[in-house]
Length: 272
Image (cartoon, rainbow, N blue to C red; front, side):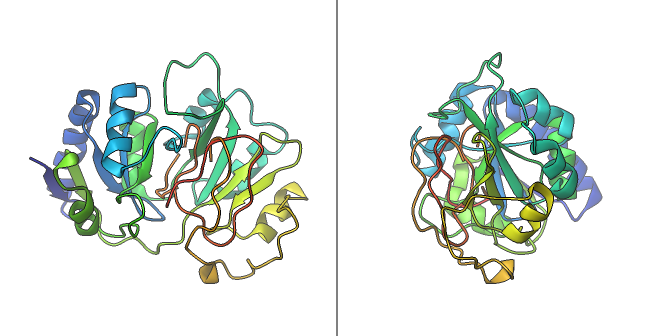
């Protein structure tokens, strides 16, 4: 049976975090709030747990989850290189709603699905999520909803969709919004936008100078007006969740506004 903790109460918050530390090595799923939507996560280094996560979502290996981290150091350990732009983007936007697609560190022993040698990483700007991630280490995280269903912005919405497939629900109250993270692919020579989200392209260009959008017309002067339904899913590869929410390999969360197809990497998920 699932355990649910009201994290507005300090005692329940402490008990909930302690329960998560025990639950994660047991392959249990954990739901918690992020700065975008609620996410559901498992230990990124336990393949059966990742499989359990995908099954709970109703997804296949072709849509691997992104990985959320609690520190920049944890993120850099997961990738082969951040490339010429990664560190500047991290300095400007992390913690926050920017998911970066990088080539994965080949020495890692994990299986997130069909990632095509890439990993999607993000450091969320939510105190409960950061505290959790610093205790557990990197988590494979997807948006806390069934595939095709609306992203959960409360613990109750997540529980309604995922039920007892989740071991622990950390209720941190409603999330501030449901605009997913922006997804940027750094595995190509020029940074490529895979999903419009909470960080407008103009702000990204202010850091890296140029972002490829495949000639897509600009629509991101106000991120809050971004269309929150995915248009087309990028072809193979990774886009880690949010969720969303939204992979080592894939980016979690459905696209907010039009997407462009990546040349490499996993598919963006429904929300992050």
